[in-house]
Length: 126
Image 1 (cartoon, helix red, strand yellow):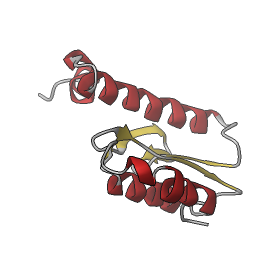
Image 2: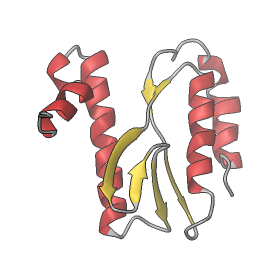
Image 3: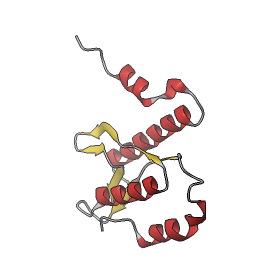
Image 4: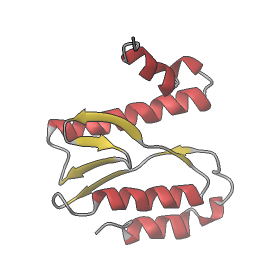
C-alpha cells in the first residue's frame, strides 16, 4: 500500500533497535512488489530507503533503464512475483549495483566503482 509493511517496520523498530549506530555506514537498496501495477511499489521502496537512512545506511538508486518502461530510481519493483523478464532484469541490475558499491567501499576494489563501469559502457562524445 505504498509504505513499509508492518512486519518490516516491527523488525526495524524492535529487532534492529539494539543495533542503532552500530550498523551506520552499511550499504543498502530496496526491492518491492505489489498485487498489481499502481500498487505503490515505488512508494514502498522510498519508505524502506527512509528507514535505512535513519539507521545510517548509504542508499542509492540506479539511472539505467532495464527496458523501455522500467528504471530503478527508487529500487526494483514488480507486480506480483518477478516472473517477467524486465522485472528479473531490474532485480539483477540493482543487485549488481549493490555488489559494485560493496566491492568498492567495503572491499576497496576501486575498479568495481559503478561510475567507472558506466563510463566504460557509454561511447565517448564527439
